[in-house]
Structure formats: structure tokens, C-alpha cells
Image 1 (cartoon, rainbow, N blue to C red):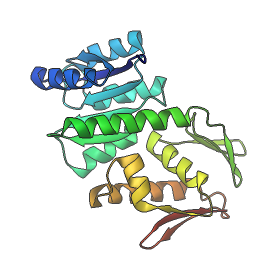
Image 2: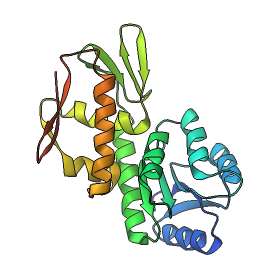
Image 3: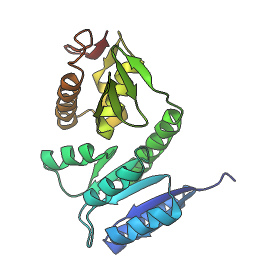
Length: 226
């Protein structure tokens, strides 16, 4: 039998936490269940899980704070937020901090499992990514940086992953629905508006090289050209 994949689950609602833990364990995941953010951080440090599932509203340390602290140490570990929050600013904040996905309660276990598997697969595929030349920039996905001459621009986790996919498909249309499902988990209107915000941020950070453009191909998606 393949070795179990270790997942850290931070959820302060005991019944829900136990349901998620038992459901994931039936799929051969090893689940480290923590009921507050402080315990979750200590468990992350000692156990080195491969993926984090974090509730946002937790005692001692909330999910956003926990994720921000972990992102300072590990820019690559996949993070899924679980929350009852549904405001746009909360979702955008989660992605800016470095979250990879955002699942609103109530949710189905099958949906959570699909998203976990998708993130683990993507993480595995991205592990060997080397810095690439992007016009006058050097783009480093692992460090989440854009460098032009001696200036280094730091990117958020979401910005870096979006730019990575645009760069892999340079001079080709990156289908809007495809990238939304891959990076946001769903291609609904809410996530589409969030992606537009990130595209605008990337355009500003790439403006030092006028030859680089991110073009909106109406009705289809985006194209990175240079």
C-alpha cells in the first residue's frame, strides 16, 4: 500500500473536524487534527505535512494569521481555507496571504477531496520549476519574485502561480475557465472578478518592460506576449 499523505487539518468545531478527519483517512490520508491555530502551527513545525486545510475562525490564532506565518517559512505548501465567510474581501485576503483554494461551509467531502488531490498533483508538478527569463525580467516561481536589473519585486503566492501559468503559455490564449478551475477551484463570477484583480496587479508589476503585455481576449481568456 502506498505511504499515506500527511495533511494538517485545523478546525475548532469538534464534530466537523472529526468528520473531515475520518473521511480523509478512508482515502489513505494521514490527518493531523488541531482545534486551534497555535497547536496547528506547532504541529506544522514538528510533523511537516504536505498540505494544510485551515478553518479561518479559530481560537488563539485565526487561519489567516496562521497561513501568513507558515508562508514566511514555506512558499509552496498547498493551503485550503475552510470558512463560513463569504465576503469578497475575505476571499481576496485569503488568496493574497497565499491560500491556494477557498471552500465555503457547508461543503461536500467529495468536493474537498477533489480539491486536495488537485492541489497535491499541481504541487508535485511545480516542484522542479527553475527561474525563467520573462522579457527583461527573471521570474522565480519558487522564491515568488520578479527581478529586473538589481530591483526585486516580491509576488504573492497567487500572483506567482497565475504568472507561472501565463508564462508557460506565452503568446497563446490561456483559457479563462481553465485557469479559474485550476487556481481558484471554480469558474464562477465571484472567482472571475478576483482573477481580474490579480491580472491588474501583474500588469503593474510588469510595466518596467513595455514589451510584455497581458492581453484580455474577450470571451476567451488572457494572453501573455513579449
